Length: 295
Length: 296
Image (cartoon, rainbow over the protein chains, first blue to last red):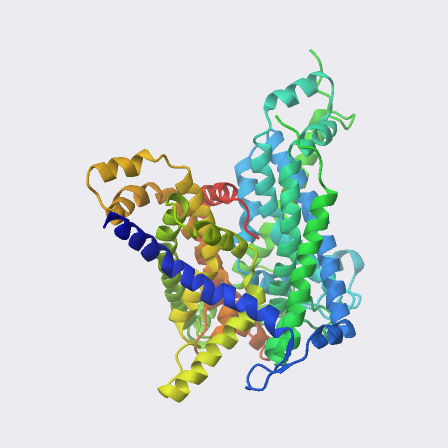
């Protein structure tokens, strides 16, 4: 009797979560992998099994390489710049005696609570060729030459997106690094200062090694979140334009699977990106492995 | 006394000034664009053809009325509030019991479910949004044949359900982390007093989890309120939109018929609630982030 009540309770508590999880996450995920092997428009009943044909087509398509290149570029630039900036600002805010420390922390985190659509709209206003903040600011230095088309030029657009992404991400990673720096005991810095080690020296010989574990975890997150965030940003800011020049992995996938209704092909992109991101994260994880330092 | 070695070989005062300068620079690059949107939202349309740095000539609140009524932002706001509230309610009522049981009860399939939910942390909605759309679309095709009416797409409740479901892995991860840290004694004492499983959970355990639940609600409020890809894909009707998608429409419309004032008023409408919430709970939010670990 008691046993029955217990298992009844367990089932009642977990069943809703498990059912929803299976229906809206597991099945769609399996679908992504399964449908990548089919040729299917998405709306018709007609599905043909084509094996790895979608992948073959994918690797011959220059559009895919364009989005691949953009994604890699964003992963490298955004990760490097955000990483350096957030690490430096985190160590300033947690090590230095700064007036208004709280104020800076609060302000730096603001972009993180804004919708990507809002950020895209803000940056569209900044990048506007004629009435934009950036061009009007730059005209102070370069005069009224031809306006720079930040989002309209095929060459510049991806860098413009990168700047917006860094703007969005710095505060988030800074707060994270600050939390792990708070765990480093002050005594280490005190004795280092007595030995005559300066700020920069302290940063490289104490702070960096001691928060290394945390940094490694965030590197994986940088990759995964850059792939996702670049999609959200590009979709709202440029929609892949001009002429596909700013397409990234997932915006290309969405375009093929949803807008162009080549569902099977789109899912093949999804599978490729999924595997790629995990492989990259795994490699980075292995390369950055150091002996853990206890404190 | 020994002088502090600054590392730059210069006097500490200059270093300090430099540090303040760098901090101020970043603060300005973040604050100026946001503040500019607020300023621009009260400008008249004609003012946008001058330098963007001019101060508004007056308080042109008509922008907000236009955005609210003409651009339908009021309507979208209502939809957003509804979906967000519903999704949060669903998420908490479904995730709380599940995380409690998954964390503290021993049963056969427990390890499988825990692993699956952990794996779910790595499934990003961006990958599965189109399959979800097609699944719901197929459901609608079936329903049209069977009862003559579609149900799944363009349904705010379904949208909220998808939001809640996709937030489950992280929420369960966070909550069961908390439940695992509790001592066994609480339940044992309750059982000795003759309380049942359900009563123990609702009256003894869940009240203790309040701080974690608040963290969950805060994070997911921001996530649901700001979300736009799922909403854009699952709500295909013109008049049925959440705020961020409505804002995207406004951005697109602005390109043809230049309505800057309306656009920036719309922007303010979308970001004001999150900014106010952030000002009230910023400490909790930045702390919660580090307690709960990472969310990509």
